[in-house]
Every structure is written in C-alpha cells, then in structure tokens.
Length: 130
Image (cartoon, rainbow, N blue to C red):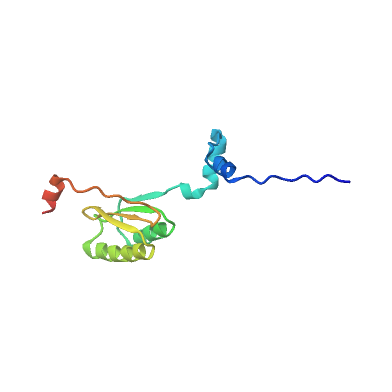
C-alpha cells in the first residue's frame, strides 16, 4: 500500500514571518528587479524654450506618458504663450495632473502619479509678489 504524504499548509505566523523577512539579494538581482518594474523609473523633461505649438504638443505627449514636464514659455510671444497654457492646462486636467507656476512664465506639469510638494513662500518672495 502506498503511503500518502500530507503537506503542511503554512500558518498565519509563518506567512507573516515570510512577508517581513529581509531578502538578501545581490546588486545584479536588484538591478533585475528595477528593470522588471518600470514603474520605479521616473522621467522628467525640461523644455527650456517652448516657442512653437509643436513644442507644446511634445510636452503634452510626454505628460500622457506620465513624464513630468518643466516648461519655460519666456521666449514665446504673449498670444502663443496663452494658447499653449490653455492647451496644456486642458491636457493636464484630463490626466489629473498637477500644475505649478515656478516663476514668471515657467511651469511644472506633473502626472497624477507624482507627488508635488510646494514649500510656503519666504517673506522676501511674498513681498516681491505684492
């Protein structure tokens, strides 16, 4: 007659212990884990001179790919600047992103998966804005 082996199911404490046990992996394995998880890679694009609407479309495409955009609209003429801001504000709203003004005509557009923290203005900056 054959003997049957009974497999023991891990208990609650064994499951918890396994979950919190530190995994000793070497650098090659760590690189493989990062490469296998592209969500950990964060891309930022700095657009120093946005002067055409095509530049704005490129920024919108980057935002759709969840890439943070920093835009400098200082070189664009005022009419185009407003058009670009309206267009990108719509794209940013649709992506549920964050829009921050960093300086005069310089903006940060961050995708919804980015956490943007803004520090309170220093008294010197607040005085300049008044």
